[in-house]
Image (cartoon, rainbow, N blue to C red; front, side, top):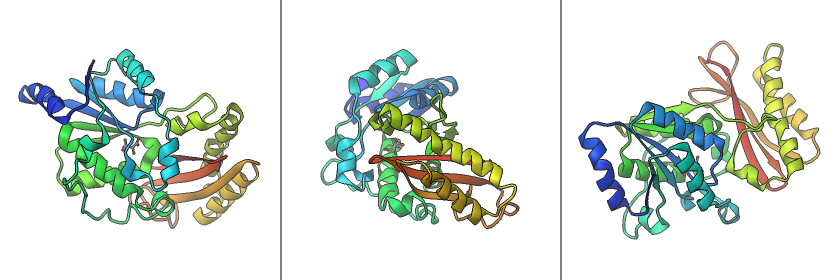
Length: 283
Ligand code: PAF
């Protein structure tokens, strides 16, 4: 496994693959890796000939300084995990390498409203920061495939939209969410939960599963209300949103017939830790 910290040496290394038309897969991460990230790495290893994983805690996507500060950082453990998974290349740049003074890295495109609801509403500016860093990393790595997890469904749609609008030569691939035994979606933020809180957090997935049943009986807005009420029953959980969205536009699903796909997306707080999850209900 090769570790690069500088853009210039990474680009030089990847040139040999590009010159031989050997496909490159890319898994961007903010570190504190877990099995979910490794499943993306494995999927990339199967589909391409060189897998690059980046570890970079991107300051521009945090809308709260305290969240950035508290974000778990475990670089030594991350490198061991990637080495064991068979990852080919790790890119671990410093912030000045990604955002050198004087370089305009802003992404000036519209997101067709995908950035307005749900995460966009509660984390203003977050997706602008995600698009900025992903575009910057894609410009550096120029991968054939970009692998992203379903847990961040809205992020996936926004990045795929960006790739389309900017005609980037990269296929954006969504991989299934990897879960703990109790159903909790794996997330770097889970490291900040106590064992009791981790058990409690399983309620998020369970409520999504309940919603999947309720849609047989109740219209979308009623299912959302029932889910919020159900989550509030758990002492220690504060639900932020629960939305049945059109899986393509992320607008509230008006009914179950018209949208081709429907996804239930939710965010909750447990003791200062914010968790998100989703379930595709149709399509
Ligand atoms: O999903 C994440 O971990 C981040 O948003 C990403 C895509 C690595 C960009 O910083």
